[in-house]
Amino acid sequence: MPKIDLQYYPGWVRKVFTFTIDDGNIKLDKKFIDHVKPAGICGTFNLKTPLKQASPEEYRALYRGYEIANHCKYHAYAFTEETTREHKNEPFDRESADKRYLYPTAEEGLYRVYTYAWCYVATDEKYLSLVRECSEELEAVFGKGTIRDYVWPCGEQKNPTCVDRMVKEGGFRSLRKTGNIGAKIGYPLPSDRMHWSYTCNPLHDDLCAMAKAYEEYPDDGKLTWFCFGLHSHDYENANRWGMLAEFCDRFGNRPETFWSAAVGEIFDYEDAVKSVVVTDTEIVNPSEVDLYIKVHGKRMILGAKSSISIS
Image (cartoon, rainbow, N blue to C red; front, side):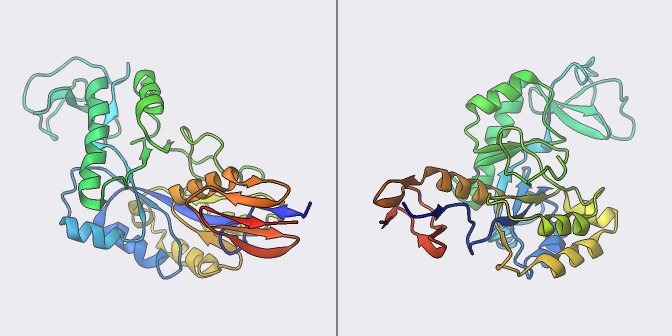
């Protein structure tokens, strides 16, 4: 039986860079893209709706080549004991509103609540409907079937009913919470895609130092990953654009060492690797993804829906 190594990304590398950027700030996402695109660094932008900052054509042009994920219509919270307060049945005014109360909106089941700022909070059914509406509105711009992942606004919700239903009924490939997990030993791909998060938050972490440690991690024969977040406005507010530029300069455009892809693309690639069937006579790839493998140390591409004979 020949030695078969399936644990490679495109380019026959075992390391990947990706990013997950929230909220869809058109101006600052463009500034972010102006850094990462020339470096070949790919990732996922997590957008909330309504999309009011530009035309559909402008949204498509800006995010072309990147993955889009659902970040909930209105960036709403789901109700918890902490956000269930007495209603104040008067028009909401950001300057004069009393933080002790909830203020109703024109949409039934949706309220204004003060947390770190005035935000939206929704009843369970309203929250789940906002998630569905966000997917529909994003797909109206970016294409049917393109929205496959969800990113919790302000971290994974503390509403067990909504969380449970999202996991079981949401139909999403993954659910991302907020809060970096740090560099786990071995840089493993997320083991639970319904509760995953990123490796590095450049607002608090040294992106270049963490990426250097990842680069120096020895080859252990496994697929690894490095994902950084969180908002393009973090780089603006904390004056971290220089750090992003340095990261792109040092780690971008290095296909001999790193692959870079959107979050969901990496998940799909991992699934494709796991789906491979090896028999005494052939290696079969039943997936829709071309795979990069080695047989007896020889590089080979195992095409989608194809097989390679072995002896």
